[in-house]
Image (cartoon, rainbow, N blue to C red):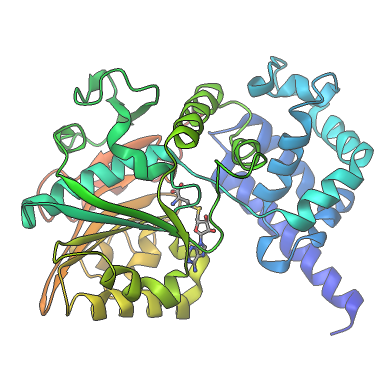
Length: 395
Ligand SMILES: C[S@@+](CC[C@H](N)C(=O)[O-])C[C@H]1O[C@@H](n2cnc3c(N)ncnc32)[C@H](O)[C@@H]1O
């Protein structure tokens, strides 16, 4: 393929990616990003800068976050008026795409710099609801102290899960009263929520690893870059993230650089003692590719020959279904559902296995629908429209 053909194919791919992103990720969550993504898809001038990023980083979120980052200290620009997180209050209208286009052209050099050198980097701490749910389930199976190893931990904010306060609707977990970080979500589907608000098992070892760990205490640019991935309407979420970043600066979570595909068995083996290790992954599988995912689960299986290992996941169900995890729901109703995550555990000890989907959830944990009973196959989910994105803006 000639260089021109390659460029053409890459732009075509990006165009489809933005259309898909607008429809499946933005609609119902962000009026501004829906409108902008639709406009970017049809505008070569806006698509082209993303070609500066390495092929694996050419994602809509990278362009939108880069602009969000730049506009955070250019609040006089007309585009800023559309960003509630930067104090704007203008409803999305026909002029928003033009303001975005002008901004990208006026700041082309700085934008190019960010797109060339920065990676997509998010840390969605509401996923701690999934972590709590999974740890409670694991503790029922293996009472006693646990180790938590998050793989793909980003800045490691989820590792402070037991210092945050939690609210589901109007119900609260009472153990973390007074925490500066309050996580909120809503429950759907009618299943019981108690396991997400009850007492946590003792966690005596914790470590987060990432291919590209974000060190908030040594890198002053890391916090603002994480914040840039908050969507324009999510004012409350930005405040929560800032509070979690401050906490992490005061008490840095234990973080290391490692690769899920190569290092998982070694990381499990190096946990002191014989206690079970809960390996938490949240939105990691889509980064690994089919071969990487197979190698990751093979390492879990190998490690489980030596000590109890639980894989605790909040991931796209279709990707989990294509690993060695088997549950009635993953074999059937959930296998091909898009736009939602499955929260579950795979408990492994020598030849014993227990796989269970504990809940369905919005990928950003804006809502969670716990199983209605043990071994639930979630066949009810299709009738309740759970895989439709919520119609309100996220917060
Ligand atoms: C979408 S972020 C999720 C971060 C965090 N788990 C959360 O839920 O907020 C995915 C993370 O996985 C990391 N990652 C991607 N491939 C990886 C690999 N092979 N090994 C370890 N981490 C990886 C990325 O660097 C990124 O920080």
